[in-house]
Amino acid sequence: MLRLDAQPTVPSLAGLTRREFLRAGSLATVGLTLPGLRTLNAEGADTERGDVNCIFLFLVGGPSQLDTWDMKPDAPEEIRGPFRPIATNVPGTRISEIFPRLARQMDRVSLVRSVHHTAAAVHDTGHQLMQTGRLFSADIDHPHVGSVVAMLKGNRGETPAHVLLPRPIGTTGGNMPHGQSAGYLGKSFDPFVPNADPIALRRDSRDDRSADFEAYDWGASRSVREAFDLNAESVAIREQYGRTRFGESCLIARRLIERGSRFVTVNMFDTVFNNVTWDMHGMAPFSTLDGYRNEVGPSFDHAYTALLDDLSARGMLSNTLIVACGEFGRTPKINPAGGRDHHPACWTVLFAGGSMQGGRVVGASDEIGSAPVDRPVSPAEIAATVYQGLGIDLKTEIPGPDEHPIRIVDQGVRPISELF
Image (cartoon, rainbow, N blue to C red):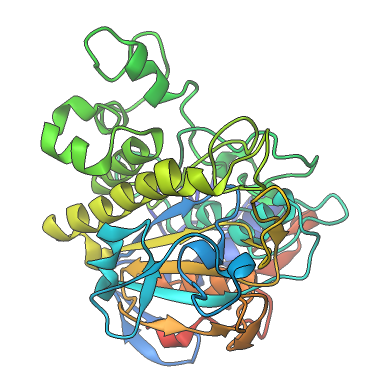
């Protein structure tokens, strides 16, 4: 049986099922994306690429663009919010004071300030769009970008090709898929998810060891078990990432990539209810802007910058793409409860590592951060940029609904060329 989750081979097509034949038909394209081979990029140019992998940080809840990476200090008080912008090490680029560490590393990071979508302003639609490039419709569940990568590139080591940490997104108020499965690619390409929260288990363990591997099925391979064992890391590194669920998940993500995973998705939160998250409506069961200053901002700032530093020190940043994004932005005007509500018309996404150029700002929003006024970017273009960054030809087809071939991105969708 032909398996695209194994190391690519040249299979015989005799006796294949229709589904296997469709998968085999994309092998020529898959072969183009293997390490050391030349690939056709989206512009048709023939380029040399290394084997780039991805850590996808999903900032569940939807960070406010106005309080993070696209501040409007000259806007009226009810729009600009309580935080002040600070200078970064990139002249002319300013971000929120809640990210002092990131401000010192902005030369490694590029901001896309004009991301938007026109679907319903609910979490689930944003989750789907940002992780698959498409919107769930008519019972069609599109695959997560990481699952597509796992199918096309297969394993490169003993750890699973696509891993999701620390656990899947749960309830966020809707009743739709969150875009974190392999969808019509089939369950064999679903991300590997620990069957128990590794961070919570470690904290319940008396000696702070990485849980009871005899009791919990982390994975069949020794490499998976080792990746989850943070006791192998120095105290200094663990403190740098932060002793939070997000910080420790980012550190595990690095350890997984190091051991052979292609794509690691890290959910910063798994719900927006009764927890301090990016979903800051200003009243219970949601968060307030104080949560940005005291908890959410510092947690992201520690973990994200530690990941940049750690990957760079290990020589891994040039072949590890890091994407940090939420599902939408927040309303420009602060609501009566002192928070901001859902706003998919404009927000910011962060890119770093791999072949991405740092220190750039792509696109711009209007004077109140309400809508793009320059270089509007869609979720489909974000997906195309990730594929491009991983050296995958955007014309690649995969088995779609009812096993009919479908392109990984729709024809005409282009990557954000300004980032490369």
